[in-house]
Length: 557
Image (cartoon, rainbow, N blue to C red; front, side):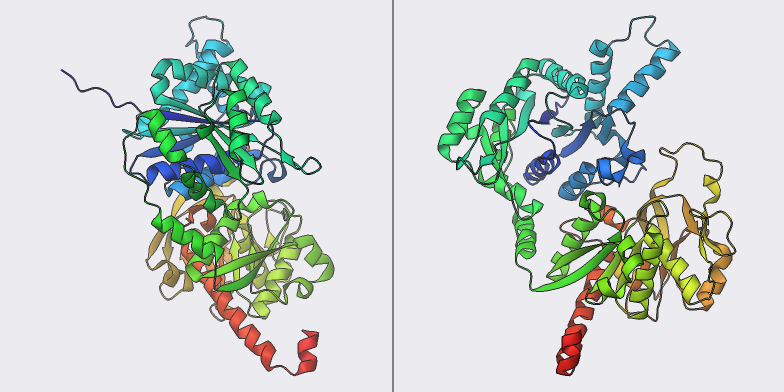
């Protein structure tokens, strides 16, 4: 008699009332709790928009594009999943309507449907269900598959996804599926109370589709008392014990602990028939305690052009949290528009910071302000980390102001240049499509011994994720190195400069890749860790200098 096939359990997370309630954090937190109980867990995001992926979307509309090892350009929630689960995900973990419809249309053109009329049901819903199951079939025996459905219940574009997960319960059974609905319980100050009606209406919409939620996560500014939970449970057909407070917290890393204290993971395991030990959360609790009660503080300036939209730099923000934990300090970020620096000068904004980070980006707007900021911190010995475009700006600044190549610039912004120190990668010259055509995903980097980067990583070769079309122009390498720029990392074939440093500077590092994409809460990325450590050292020395200054100079500074 053959052995029965392992049956994965499916958890579906939906959202109602408004967007941006934190479904991604909630999904990642549930994944962490279940994994900490010894279960094998994977997690995926299904987005209803028609873009094939977010790679061509404006950060103001979508926030950060999170790049995976396999080169997939994905939703920023994939970053939360990787950080909380400490696992690398793949393209199959982020599916959009665009990708689903693209596949169906290609099949229809090939004649795969044998002349049938192609419809939302069953063809679209079947394709969605097949992708839901991919996480199970390609990861081996997975105990739990968590799927976050993007958007809000009631959105027209999300209906095929909700219909697909409704069908999944029929196909794999009640005991193998769990519906968790995240909704809003607003506090009305004039009435002095929490209002449950938005949650009631959201659940009503979900039930009209045919989905009865098993658990409600209620986002609110304060915990729900027993009477509110009973009211929500009564009108939403959910036991009060399955109504969970999802209150606002200071750090997103508190969320799993808050859920655990309310017994959410016990409830999930009970409803899915999962037998497993209590969660091991000691390391996570220690990490959160360090976030909440650091011994030191440093101030890092982030100079970019999307500084009014912090979601565009989500992974950088979290990397500073992780690096702060390992340095026992709180990293306070100061957001500065590069255009303000161009207008008012760098000194006005950077004289009192402990470090400068220039993040990645595209387009010429704000580049001159970034270059000016880099010059200021290089000359004043303030710690610096440049990422992707940030590294390229550092190369341009060094070429102009140290090598006296006054008109040095990047071919990304100007085609006719006497000194194109940054140029288009050779394999990008024939590219015409914008989506998914950059140098994307994980590539190896060989580190130069004796470099700061080598000492940070502690090994000679690393793998880092990329997202770029332009690179350091090797025609200027010898000239820049002779002037004091150090190539601290390069591709194994030595064609691509991956890391540059200025050895005469306490900490001046630029990287072509995106280290923020591989930082984890309990294991900070080595470059962020050492950058923050350099900022701590700089701050301590700066404070000593200020104390020893004459009183009139202290007032001026």
